[in-house]
Image (cartoon, rainbow, N blue to C red; front, side):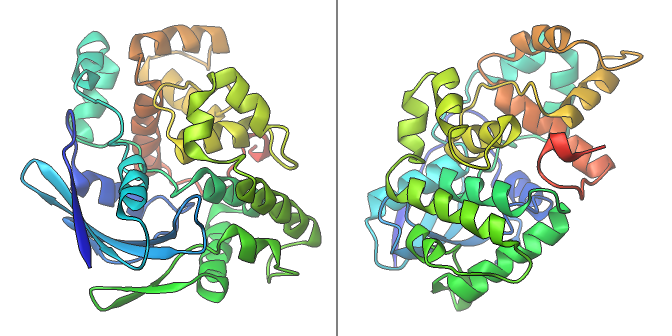
Length: 305
């Protein structure tokens, strides 16, 4: 076991992140759910054949990660940093709440919460395929079974965990219970894209937002909403406002006292005050929405009634 430390810039609460994970069915992280102690397992991005486990805890002003498995510690640390959105300087985030009373109220309700991501854009992309046109809870069960049946096992402080299957393993999958043949074919395409580096998080973040989304939408099975999810919740873009997430738009209409959901341009205007943390604020809306009305539909807004 080796350890690394991360010093957050700006407010951060691992406890708030853990509570959020408990309701984040798409990630299906499992593992220890103690508010100050989180166990996770994942294939290392770029290497893929190495699955590691990490125990994350918050100690005073630092976040400490204990790593279990054979992998480059610096690479693993980068993934953990991105997973918890600690790669972004959040020192200016409280200022957004001072500019916008609605955001300020959300920040007080979810103090220290930053977006918690998928381990990689690859995993996020696979989730969008698995979850297409089925309920989130059903998709989460399928994804968890895939980890158990096809992923590698790692032991973290005596707890056995399975990471999501590597792209190579996913590319060789002929069939899986609960998945139609078309979804299996699409997952093969996602796996190949990951192996070719198309879904590398740093690569996606190096492009303009428009170019990154356009490249993602070239992948079979990836539409507007899925591309946004991969970029924001996979690669960790901190400042994107979704034009396709209708539940977010409805939550905004309620919070800002509109009689009905206004034109997207009006909502985009409101979100301008959230820069450079539009993704972060959107997650606060999502967290509140999940607390009030848990979403058990599929991940794509275009499939919701």
